Image 1 (cartoon, rainbow, N blue to C red):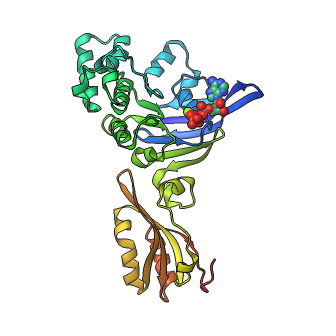
Image 2 (cartoon, rainbow, N blue to C red; image 1 turned 90 degrees about the horizontal axis):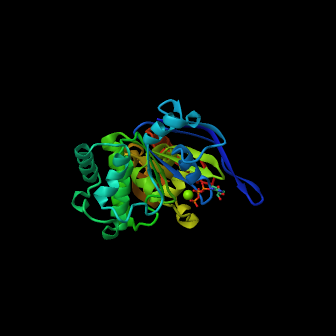
Image 3 (cartoon, rainbow, N blue to C red; image 1 turned 45 degrees about the vertical axis):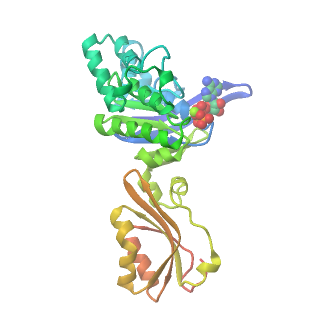
Length: 336
Ligand SMILES: Nc1ncnc2c1ncn2[C@@H]1O[C@H](COP(=O)(O)OP(=O)(O)OP(=O)(O)O)[C@@H](O)[C@H]1O
Ligand SMILES: [Mg+2]
C-alpha cells in the first residue's frame, strides 16, 4: 500500500516559484494499478519522482507499507529505494549490454552471486515473454521489446512497488498492448503495486484499477475506475465511455430519454431487455455503445422509452444497480 499525504513540491522558476504539487493525497492499495493522468505540466512526473525518492518533496509524507520514506536517509533510504522499481521515461537500456545483461544490472549492483543471478534473469525474461531475446542487444529489439526489458530490469531486485512514467508514449497501439500486458502480469503474478503515469487513456482502460486526475498540482478526481465511470458526469467517464450525441429531433418522439451506464456482464446483457418486458415499455437505443475496461464490459447508451410505465422502468433499472444519468425529458414530456 502506498499512501501519499499532503505532498507539496515547488521549483524555482524565472518568475518566482513554480508549484508542481500542491497538497496531493492519494492511496494505492497493495497489488493494484493506479493510473495518474492529467494535462502536460500537471505534476505527474514530479509525483512519480517523489514516490521513487528521486526528488525530495517540500512537505508531506509518502508511506510504503506504513514507513514514511520522506523521513529516511542513509542506509534506510537506500533500502527503501530497493523496494521501488522504476521504469524511466524513454529509452533507458544500456546499448552495449544484451537484454539479459540489462536485466542483470541491478542484481550485479546488489552483489547477487552468478548462478542465482542467471536464474533470476531467466525468470524475469520469461515473465516479460522475451526469453528468446536474452542475447539480443537493444538495437536489435523493437521499442516495445525494449520497454519490456526495462520493466524486467525494474523488477529484478524484487520491489513491492513499480513506477512507470509514460511507458507507452513512444509506442504504437499494438506494441502498447504488449507492454501493458507485462505491467498487468507484474501485478497479477507478483502482487506488485503499480503506479503508471500516462497521457494515454488506453492505459487506464486496459490495466488500471484506480485513476487519479492531476491538474495544476492538485488531485481533481481519484477513485476506482469502475466507480468513476458509473458516475457518468466524471472526467474519467467522459474520456472512457462511448460518446452519446445530442439529437433533439430524434429524441422528441419518445416519452422519456435517458443516458444509462451499465457495468458488468449481467447488467450489460440483461437489464434493458428485462426492463422492457417487466414494464411493457418500448425501449430504443439512440446512441452510445459498448466498451471494455480491463476485463469488465461497460456500456453507455442513450435510450428513448415509450409507454405509460417509462418512469417505473427507469427507476427499476437504477435500483438494479445501473446508473441512469439523466432524464432528458421530464414527466410532462418536456425537456428537463
Ligand atoms: N526540475 C524542475 N525545475 C523547475 N521546474 C520544474 C522541474 N520539474 C518540473 N518542473 C515544473 O513543475 C511542473 C510540473 O512538471 P511535471 O514534469 O511534473 O509535469 P507532468 O504532468 O509530468 O507533465 P508532462 O505531461 O508534460 O510530462 C511544470 O510546471 C514544470 O515546468
Ligand atoms: Mg511528465
